[in-house]
Image 1 (cartoon, rainbow, N blue to C red):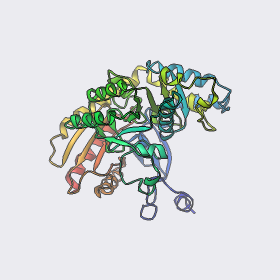
Image 2: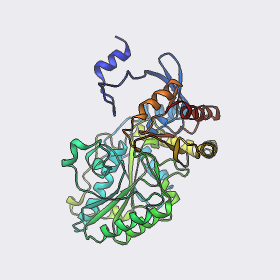
Image 3: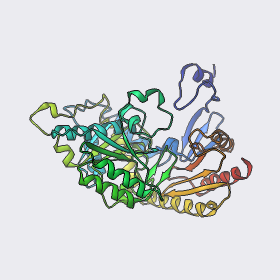
Image 4: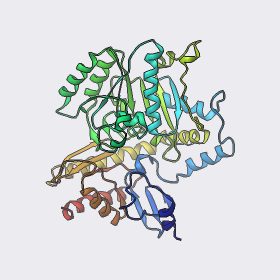
Length: 423
C-alpha cells in the first residue's frame, strides 16, 4: 500500500468530509515558508499551517533547543514539581504582558479557553457570588471543546451538540458601523447582576472570516465590563505573537484584560502547548486554607519541558532584530497589495491588520464558511503550489515571517489571476 492508501485506511482528518474529500497531499519535509510533497514539489505555506508557524518550518535553532531539552528532561509531573524551562517561560512571557501575574499551562487553544472560562467562573464562586452569565461576540470561534464551542458563534459546526452547551449572551461584533449596536446590547446585558465574564478575540476574529475591528471600541467594552467586575478574557490564540503587528493584539489597547489565552505561535509552531495568563486579582481568589477553592484543573502533560524549550527558543528569535524587520517587511508588503486590490470589482471588504490580509470574493451567496466558491479557490491555488485555505469566500494570507518577497509576490499574483479566471 502507498502512504496515501494507508492514510485512507487508518486516518480521520479534521474539518474534512471524508466521503467526498480528495486524497490528502503527502508532505515529506519542510523548510522556511515551504513544504515539500512526496515528489519534492515546493508549496508556499501562506497560512502558516493553520496559523501556528511564525519563524518558518524546521527552524534549526528551535530544533536544536528541543534536542538539548530532550537529552536533559523530557517530562515530569507538574503537580508538586517544577523545572527551569517553565519558570523562565513564565518570567519572560509576562514581561510582554506586565498587567498579568501568573501563567497556567495546557496544551492547545481550545483548552486554554476552557481554563480561562473556568478561572472566571470559579473566581466569582470562590468570592461567594452567583455569577454565571457569559458574554461573547457573534461570529466568534474559540475552539472545539464544549466550553469553547458554547462561546463560539452559531456557525453550523456545532448543531449536534447545541442542547448540551451552556447558554451565552451574544453581542454584535463591533465592526465599523456596528459599534453603537454592540455597546447598547452590552449595556442591557450588564444590567443583570449575574454576569461573570466576557470573552473576545481582540481586533481579529479568525475562523469567523478574518473579521476585523478597531481597538477603541474594544477599550470601551473592557471599561464597561470592569466597572461591573465582569472578568475580561482575551483569546489571543491566533492574534498573539505579532500577527496584528504587535506582540499581542491587546498591546494596541489602552485597557487590559484580566485573562489572556494563547497557543499556536507560542512554540514557533513546533509543539502543542498553550497558556492561560491571569491577573493577581484573579489568582488571589483561589488562595485559601479551604482546599475546595483550589483550581482543580490539569492534564498529564501540563508544563511539558520540551514545549517550554521550544517556546523559549521562539522568544529568542522574536528578540532578534531580523525577525522584527521581517514582520515589518510583511506588513508593508501587504499594505502595498491591499492598495492595489481594494477597489477591484470582484472583491469587497479588503482589510488588513498587521501581518494578516483578507478579502471577500464577491459571490451570489452571502459570505459564509460554507460558500461553494471555497473549494474552487483552494484547488486553484494548490494547482499553483500555494497553500491558501479560504474561509468560504474569504481569502486571507497569514504567512510565516520568513517568507521571501519573491514568495509573497507569487501569492499575490495567484490571487490576481484567480480574480480574472474564476467566476
